[in-house]
Image 1 (cartoon, rainbow, N blue to C red):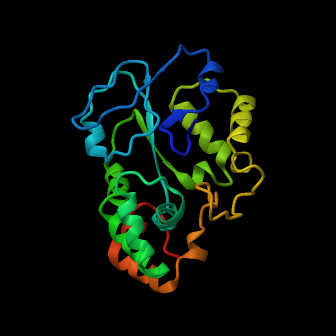
Image 2: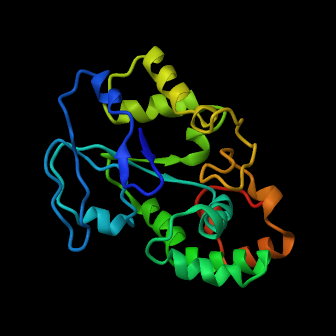
Length: 232
């Protein structure tokens, strides 16, 4: 379980997860991916934005377990726009992209985002569809944070070979629920000033204008269907 704090690197927020499984302490490494750095044994990598071919080329200790989370690209576009426009700290290419969309209309900014994501995050997600590594599990964001969350996390923890009881899992999911992380907001209640903005899948239906959606499909082609989502 991880949490990204504003102005800080991604860190393991719930080290108690491992404490509750009687596992020895783990290293929490910040990896330099260029060139690929071998991952040392008993290391947890909390966040790695990599296409599958790059991940595949990284020397890894055996056995290992991992997972890749992808989401509906339309929701990702809405999230990208609001994050870049309002809430993300100004690092890397974000100041340039923020300056660009500040001078565009809402629809124009979203279309600009679709063009950027098609070459980055969307392409990365598509690359993972070729993953045949049994040590890795592909997870949909909508499953992890939808109505069948408990079942999805049970499957994930089983894949990770973590001995988590039902009670422990329920406690963790409650502790890191959207409501607790936002001090009382329910999933779907939007706070435009928060990086944890909506917390509920499917918001694209309310936030993507028809003209943007039409242009989105022109730019991305069959991306939505390739990732297993319907256009309606």
